[in-house]
Image (cartoon, rainbow over all chains, first blue to last red):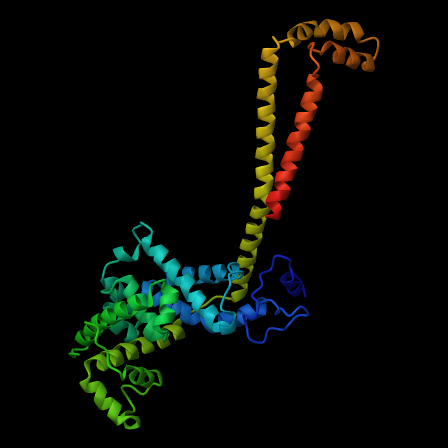
Length: 200
Length: 181
């Protein structure tokens, strides 16, 4: 009861038409996203967002922090105009955009824990501890790529985003994404092929 | 050089459906193409590796409850709203202070040009006060009022009152203007 009352606070954010099934109001607007709608959206997106952050940063703890911050910023920035017709797809993309920016800010920050300063065997050690086959294969290869390439590859091949969507998430041009992705793919294919003792 | 194969879309679909590298029987021709085409071979290898990595990572992800994030966002929004409300008030206070300072400086300059006409009044103030203390508070005030006249048409108390009112109203006007904005 108290929960419902608090969701009706005057400063509560409103995202018109953001979620399918929003209830139209008398003035033609759509009911705001409430805590339950957010919980549902969170359930559908949190794991993939965490996977993206953890695998591109190589640091699960950092991924946890950045994921939480991404959702908080997503909720706070709800007044930002979105592609309302695209609904949840646009929300999901926007969430990944926030996470990508946070990750980039983290890497830019001058401190010893920056991803650029992490030794190359960090990913390999993480892989050993997780005892995951794909991590054992992908981790060492990912560690040899630039952070941006890791992001591009994950968005393209794990999340299945198109070049246009990746451009939107990363802030790069579509043409640049195509070229960068091609080079990154070629590089990691070589690394994965070498790792498996197979020539591509 | 950026050389891609026109069949990459098909290959990507094959991997996304989980039909690579297994299930060769479902698309034998495409499987044969992948083994000969460098671009498609790379795509199949990379995409299948990332798909597997994603599936494992998603399965291993430990995510916290969404309610915590919800309330954190609410709290942050509330703080931002409070900060937004406080900004015009701070501006109004600064404006009022600046106007008061300007008036004080102006008044001091004006008094200096008048030859500090209030100095004799200040020196006589204890005497005047003692003299009128028996005749009541109202008489003392009127004495102060009359003795404060510097000899010009301006009364400094009126000037100060007007200045303070102006500063107050200016601050309120600025607050209202900023708040509306």
